[in-house]
Amino acid sequence: MRKTPIVLIAMFFELFCSGPQMLWATAPDIVVIMADDMGYSDPGCFGGEIKTPNLDRLADGGLRFTNFYSENMCWVSRAAMLTGIYHKTSMVKNTLHPRCVSLAEAVRGNGYQTRMSGKWHLAGKPYHVYPNDRGFDQFYGILGGAASFFAPASLCRNRTNVEEEAHNDPNYYFTNAVSREASRMIHEADADRPLFLSVAYTAAHWPLHAPENEVAAYKGRYAIGWDQLREQRLERMKQLGIVRDEVTLSNRHTNVPSWQTEPHREWQQRRMEVYAAQVTVMDRGIGRIVDALKQTGRFENTLIFFTIDNGGCHVEYTPDRKGDYLPQATRDGRPVRPGNLPEIMPGPEDTYQSYGHGWANASNTPYRLFKQYDHEGGIRTPMIAHWPNGITATGRLVPTVSHLIDIMPTVLEVTATTVPEEIADGTPVQMDGISLAGAFTGESLSGHETLFFHHHKGQALRHGDWKLVAAKQDKKKMSWELYNLKQDPTEQQDLAGQMPQRVRELSAIWDAESARLATQALID
Image 1 (cartoon, helix red, strand yellow):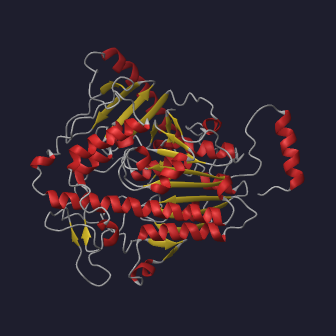
Image 2 (tube, rainbow, N blue to C red):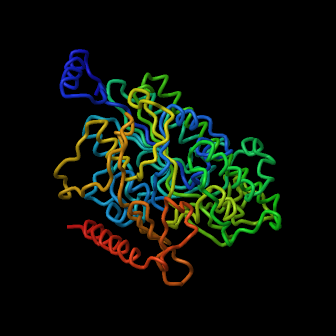
């Protein structure tokens, strides 16, 4: 709620008398932007060659968090971000736990207008829980985790299915629609009340879909192949200070041939060209959202977060894969040809492909493995915070060990929002996250001493500089690996055999944390 001059004077006097601290005189607007299945090094401001000028400007005018973590897959990351609680507690039956207060619910209780545009992916199975059920006043987007970019399944406006909007518009492209609707929500918001807006893109999740003119802008850019691309990205990351000068590349994944021996180089180039185009279209949409904030006078007092839900995705899309997200035909009746087939160039509506191991390995430069795993390539993600009225000494890199669970506590602090002590379903589960707001004013934050991970093909514990991690490989029993991330950030030298006592100590912490989260998740 916007303050009157008399209230502002009183607030200033109170803050001045209480000691030195940041004066956030009016409740800031909040915009949280999440991209989908992108790697740590993809944005230009984190070392990538993909054109992301709008993200780069936000980074230059804000902060880049270089030790930021997600979960290893889409929906669990969204649950963590929207609750400040590890997904092992915050999720039940593929949706948010009833005793976990969502960020939208919390700030709406403090007078905020709440809007969401994009991918929900917390609808349960079958889909029945809408963003409107968890604190959002308005919603436009898809309920599921993936869809055709040209004709998305489960496309809704609030609770109403509007798939026909895409079917009736030959120029429809979901990324553009997400940006357009987010901009509309900003323009139509009540000027006298603060706004919370969640923007959740599906870019650059499969399928590889992009308008041909956007793909053409990258024609030939990836002829160098993934090996040289990884080297170039690492060098730029060092120049930017994203990683230390002594950092080396992780080994090329065993499923990735050298570029010189790759038999389908033209097709492989095209896959990365489409992927890059998807990211650039998203970045342009972020620029459109920033413009809407400026046009409505909100920009200077808007805290914008940008992050990604997990690392780049290696999964090879097979022709026999099916799902409600995969249409059988295009809008004009042509059969969709699914699968990563080298004889079919991806991009158009009648294709349904992914970019595979080689390019995901490059996206996650310099780290190991991918989405679904808890090695650094699956969970180390970029995070940008931008707030002209609230962030001092812009352009800084913040090395604080932090996580998606920290977004909600940070927003609660800067908006002076508290979670109610009791809700309809009982006592709310306490958040696992910490506020990062101190970083906005140059405070040196201690960050998390311990971070816990456990989902799908991975489990891990980061404790200080130590990382205990295991990966599920086929039917083999998972076994712990041990790394010192300060000395070996790309997880190349497994110390588990040399330091069994350290493994036992850290695995005991992991077991205790796992048991705690499981107990919290029990529904009364």
